[in-house]
Length: 99
Image (cartoon, rainbow, N blue to C red; front, top):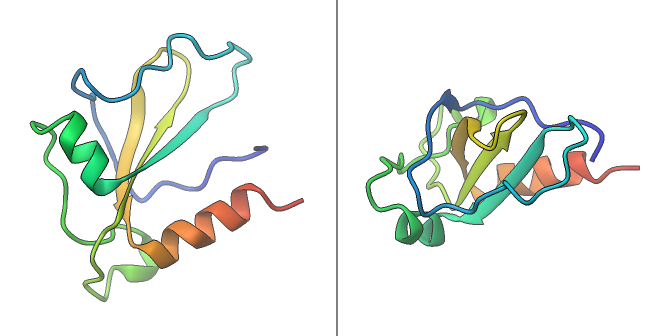
């Protein structure tokens, strides 16, 4: 992955329970993780998850969020987290893995 998507999210500190990236290789590249929303809620029930997609393209619509995203750089803590609908998640994945 050359570039991470521009997050629509908010700065946050993740609670323990979400996947740790302490074992990830340190090449100064940001790490982008995405989990089904239900799994992220189960791993960290104290994290307040919005019910609707936070991507810019869905701000005028209320589309149900399905996926939790986190952008992690530097230290093993998330810099940004956001939730997105299935369509926006698909577009982010297509963009991230485009050649």
